[in-house]
Image 1 (spheres, rainbow, N blue to C red):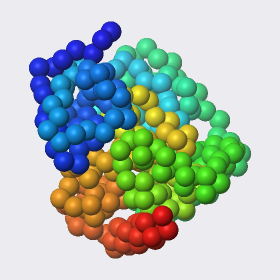
Image 2 (image 1 turned 180 degrees about the vertical axis):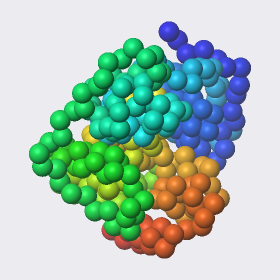
Image 3 (image 1 turned 135 degrees about the horizontal axis):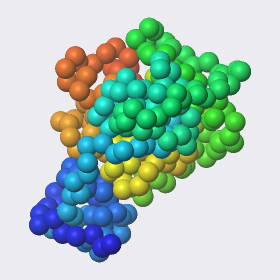
Length: 290
C-alpha cells in the first residue's frame, strides 16, 4: 500500500537530515522518502519542503509478541505499556523471567494458558561486569545480558579496524558525522562487537533492546542489535535524534550514555562526564588522522 500524505509539511532547516526529520515527526525514514520520491540516503537542502506521511495510530498493546534477540521480559513489558507481573500472569510464568528468542508471549491475561515450562538455562554462561551498578540491576536483565554475550561470543565478527570502517560507512549513508560515530564506538566498545554490559547494552554501539525498538521505529524496519550493521544503524539514529533534541552535542552524548531524562533530572554522573570527554578526545584524534 502506498504511503499517504498526512496533510502536514516541513521546511528543512540547516543541518537537517532525513532521519532527524522523520524522528521529530514520528514517522519512518522509508515512508518519508517514498512520499517525497527521494532516496533515504539523500542529503536535504535548506528551505526544501517535505510532505509528511500520515501517522498510523496503532493500538496501545498487541495481543501477542514474538521474542526477538536481545529482548528481556522487562523490556517487552515496557514496550507494550504493561508491567512485568502482568506479562508473567498472561503467560502463566510464575516468578520466571527467562524467555527465549522466537517464543510467543501473550500480552493479556485470558486465564486459559496452561502453566508454562521455563526454557532450560545453558550450563555455562560468560560473566558480564556489573561495575558500579551493583545491586541496582535486576537479575533478569543481567541474565539476558549473559545470554546475549554467549550468542555474540559464538559468532565471527569483523576486526576492530574493519568495524571502524563499517561505522564510518554507515554514518555517511545516514548523513551522520563519521568521526563522531567512530569516537562513540571506540569509547563504548573499542570496536569490539562482542561487548555486552550487565545492563544488557549490546555490541559495538552498546544499544539496549528498548533503545533498539525506538531506533527501529525511526528507520522503519526491525533492527537486530546482535547484528553489527544493525547495531551501528541503531546507535547512529539514536544519537542523531539526541543531537536534534538537545542544546549541545555534549548534552546529546551524555544522554546517549546516561539517558537524557536522567541527565536533565539528576545532572551528569562522573562516569558520564568521563564518557563525553573520551568521545571528544577520540574524535579529535580521528579528525587529525584523516
